[in-house]
Length: 152
Image (tube, rainbow, N blue to C red; front, side, top):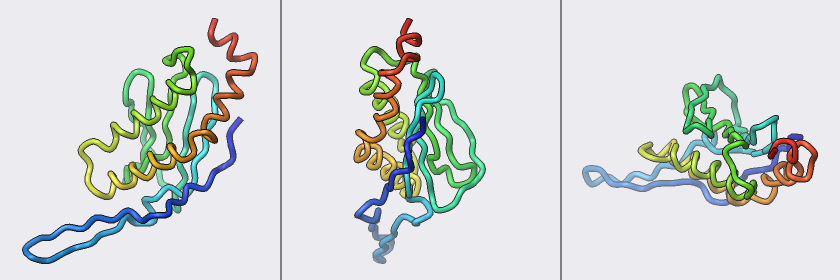
């Protein structure tokens, strides 16, 4: 079961200031790169976290590691989805799964510029802020018959 889209509004704009040749610049993240909503669900043997933006675009799937894949915008590289293979997690389902999600975002943030780094930082903040809501599908999965069959 998919959770409803949850608002992901951040109170603070993501900004950076720098100086070049004596000229000070202040830049802010485009609203098109800011996640507007987030939801999560269990689909078969996968836990999925999705992000929604002002606009959509074609996406590409990237393998992060043998247990985690990310789906990013073809042009923007915005983070649209994180897919975690539930077979990769131990009996600490929620903790391990959310660690995989957070690790995927951290991996994306490595070595990117302000725009992408800021967008990924906001995605990380949304996951942290909405952690309890995003864990609800995992709780339902744990309590269901499919979890017992899945673990054996």
